[in-house]
Length: 295
Image 1: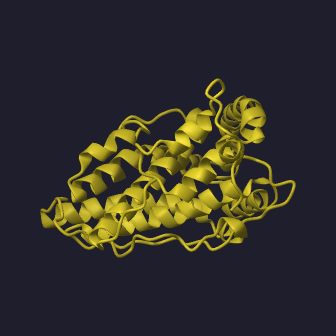
Image 2 (image 1 turned 90 degrees about the vertical axis):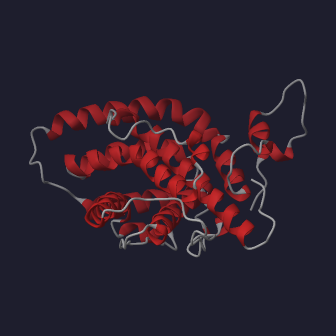
């Protein structure tokens, strides 16, 4: 793993690096390697110079595509084409740090749902996603990721209601499914043209996602981001640790937001998942009697 520029440059008190300050701050739980990759991506020239132009362009496309789709069949979708296009873009244009964080997200989201299912007082099936490479995204992975979240919440709450139960703190939670995904940053595509940062890529992918899926699929995907609070509450209830919800801020799940901010909120979603997973990893290390890794 290459050393980010902000860690190589000597600290100058008259010109301090904001990225170094964020990296050295340990107030939030996050894996150190993830933090380095995240801040390396955030401090890239792509994010500095491409994102300010990409974001308004992508949001304008969302409006244009929304108008255009009012005149097309509601159920017309090209999911396989979408995912092949996303995988191609990831393979050829996205920075290795961004690709690594995207693939990690599928693993981490699956582990979090498995954690809740394992510690819930009712049986809930899950459908874990564990991509090993960018090419695995081609199998409708983004769409299935959204479906998994909604289906899990529906099945969990249907089972709780049917049995007259509710989520409660667990004295000795099962953390066996929580672990480091078998993905290495060094294995990600690393060509000269792999320059696009994570947030710019998300902003660009969002209108493409809208264009090639149905309105229902796109609406469901963008509003799944507001379920961060829901999943956070489930985990916090099981762990009796609601104070850790302070950084979950994708807004109230009962108040859908405009799809125009989906790219920014998707970045928040990824970061919230990383922090919840890091917290569970630290808890697992403590339960095993090991020294938990500092973020």
